[in-house]
Length: 563
Image 1 (cartoon, one colour):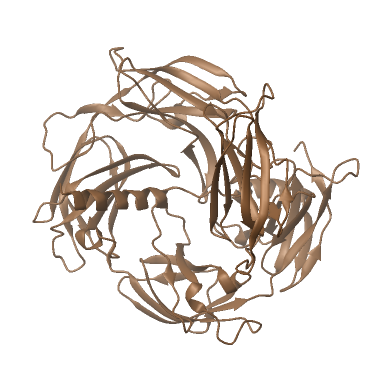
Image 2: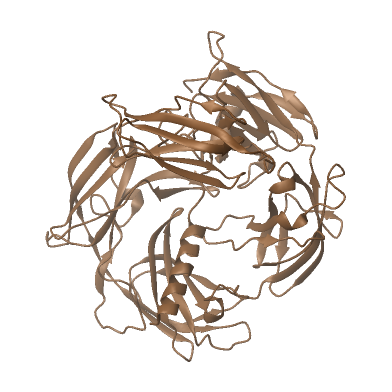
């Protein structure tokens, strides 16, 4: 394979991996819009120390990351011999900070429990924020061996700790922390794990999927869960505490019959894809369990994939027209369920996207000739799909836009930045019909015109403080706001929101006008706040409130604990 194809393949793999990862459901400061800081100079400083949570000793060469998506500013610092770090020349805005080092559990600023979102740090011009310290706990360690059906050790097995989360509208298993690989005597070591309950998975990597390889050998191993089952529901759960070590976990791989898949890839007009890359992606929840690729397709568009273990896969073909960064106009992708039997005469057919055109309508308070070109638009599927999504569309200078959207129902969303940093979408109308929450059903090769996206700067917000049972102002909690209408509890809904307090214990949440519940809880695991079962359980303890467009409402809440 040529260097050019290899480089292009690497870029494709990066984009697929990025699309398959689910962003944290509850990032630090979620629910707060960015602000326009383009005119602010970088004069602020954040400094602090990183300590060993068990001994209190400073940790040298710990990594500290400061991130401000609204400013598009990402910084990295390393602690010195005294555990000290410093970020200089920071622009005013909100930043999330995180610290990590080796076998310690990485933490975000303000995070006090595992899998809890951190807090944002509010930074002003010329401000010095000192003693922004981190105390990292020792991570738990799980060690063991992976063997075959004869008890012999197996090398090159990827081992991962997985945990149940709620994401993309469903409960699923996802990889937590780092993965490990067995050595030549089958040993593995997972480290830096936060306390919690895990399922341990083992996936044999030595026999990779082979594109256009033909073999009569069908023996292999299915992805296996401790102690030795191919069904994750039957796996034994492992509960670990802070810094705990669990040793001698033996996982016996599950033998299985490997399958061979053969077929043809053609475009929407039936022409074979004679030059392209084929990828097989197997997902486990929101994480990639298997990502295997081969070289170029055969000249006649046919392919054969060997060594495919039982499971559910997404097969994707990337035509050569998209290898050098040129957007591929057609989507060639299909889901496959493999159960040990060969799959022959598969036909992957390209689907043309919809061509969507429309215009941006700025808010009345915005400039008469705003710089529309800084706006980026996205089409997000109403039903979340791990591998869905594509490059954003940039709006033209005059506010018009054209975008390509794969078939299916999707919502149009915006990435606010620059002069539109304090703007939000007020209305999405297709030929006069409001579709901001219902989405649009896009069909293959359809021309969709007359799409209007109206912006507003009249943002509704609720703010206040939370007091505990003794009437003291609480500094550590999570606010969850959600619509009183249960129909609005769908994945990606604009009507489910929340956040963490700032340094002073105050919260501020931005949300559309409507009728809501609000509740302050001492702990909310990331993603849980979008689970309808969670919302149903807590709504009877929540405070009801209503808010109109552009209104700022003050709301004081009582901290709910122990439920």
